[in-house]
Length: 115
Image (cartoon, rainbow, N blue to C red; front, side, top):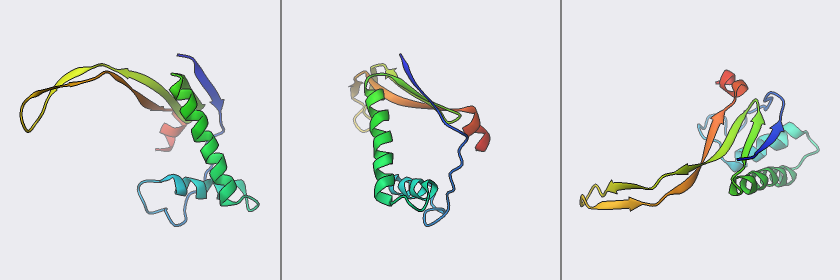
């Protein structure tokens, strides 16, 4: 698997604001933080385009089975999942689960240090 290497500085995002108390950040919360961190001249629409561009690039790389390494943040990679045989909990009948792929994330050293 070939990787896409991207180096980024240590995270300096300033969170806070309306979604600070929530435990899960959604896309609109991320857009607000990006707009705030890019400065007063950046609109939410511009921040949304930036977030969408990053997510589209990451999705395209993962679709091509490439890993994405963000230095200090972590690595996203596609992993194969084997097919397996399970049992339906209601009926007890055997069920086959087909092999597939999934995205895995491994946190980098800097991110681990922040947690």
